[in-house]
Image 1 (cartoon, protein in one colour):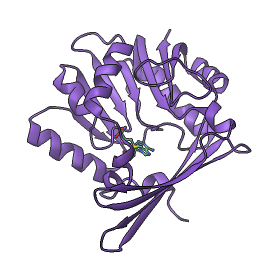
Image 2: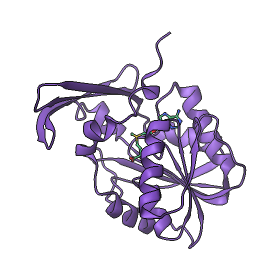
Image 3: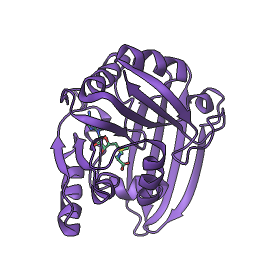
Image 4: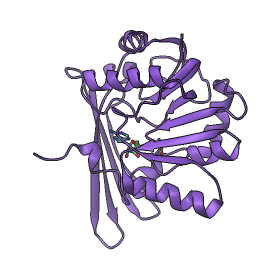
Length: 246
Ligand SMILES: C[S@@+](CC[C@H](N)C(=O)[O-])C[C@H]1O[C@@H](n2cnc3c(N)ncnc32)[C@H](O)[C@@H]1O
């Protein structure tokens, strides 16, 4: 049986394939702490922390940060950087479907589409774990693709851009029947060598998320169109959901 895509694509090639569409993480962290009222010294978990783009700056700001990721390779990049920069983060190699630490965190962050990788039941299990792992009153922030854009056909695109290591072809297709988006990235390096990877992620509407989040013991407080706090509209760049454990 082939391994699922999310167990194979997050490796050393990821920064080359997905780095070009990432925003400046220091700026994103500044926006996040504006959007989410996280008390100084709070316990924060970054679920699907990758190479620590946000976990490391959050720790530098004085939060006690746990970074959870399934990929040992991404975590190795994170550990190496944290070591170089002398920043402490607790790195945990675990599946987000299993990671559970009752009443431990003031905030849980899921950034850059790190939610929705599984079937509906397992995606909901992730939220149930979050609901239990947050302290009462703790906050969840989900930074997701905008489902309304997908349904309107506005997520679908294909483009080739020039990046430092070559030509990067980006292709996104949203399947209305399954509610899933498939994003393929193919890099042709200057020497002609090609590398590629593909994402397959369930994109939830506000209504679907609201119901799942409530079943997980949390309630949506606000929805924004980006981490900058822009209004959430049909054409918004992202869907940033902020929920609180009751
Ligand atoms: C799109 S990347 C985003 C990483 C990071 N949040 C960022 O903004 O750079 C998603 C991350 O989720 C991790 N991941 C995938 N499946 C996972 C799982 N089942 N449990 C925990 N982490 C997982 C991947 O290894 C990857 O590092």
